[in-house]
Amino acid sequence: MIELVMVIVILGILAAVAIPRFMDMRSEAEKSVVSSLVGSLRSARSLAYSKLVLCGGLYGNNSPLHMGHFVRLDNNPPDEFICTSGSITGHTIGVDGIRDSLLQNSGDNIMVGISDDVMTLNTKTGRAVTITHNPTTGAITWVATPIY
Image 1 (tube, rainbow, N blue to C red):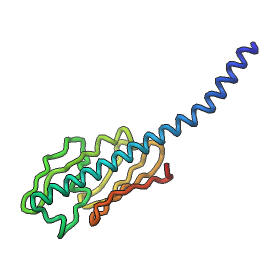
Image 2 (image 1 turned 90 degrees about the horizontal axis):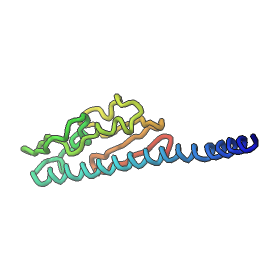
Image 3 (image 1 turned 45 degrees about the horizontal axis):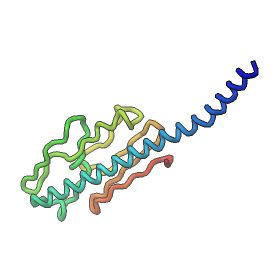
Image 4 (image 1 turned 45 degrees about the vertical axis):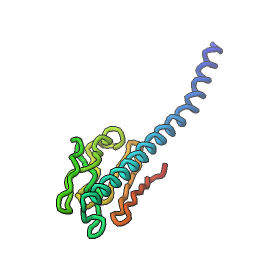
């Protein structure tokens, strides 16, 4: 009987130590997914800007390249990116695939409007992540509340 009680006590101690570490691992994994998404957005923006420069697009000088120009929100594959007469069609990245793995509610909207440069995500760990694109400098930054 004493041995059984000791085993239960030891298992309780192990559970008390392991569960907080497991929860911290989930937050770290989620942080990695957000960082990866931001890196993908930066790459997509660079590709879109490079394609516009190569085909004589006007976005470098006269009007900004917004996040909505190079990000696709539905679950279809990205369109072929085409430049015609300084205007663009197509996207270089689709973000709908993150809905199930990252978002608290997979039905949430990620971004609204082609000229919107802010994404707001409510993650599974209860954080509000805001990803901001500066169309003038091209910088893409993110912040989570509460922080990771």
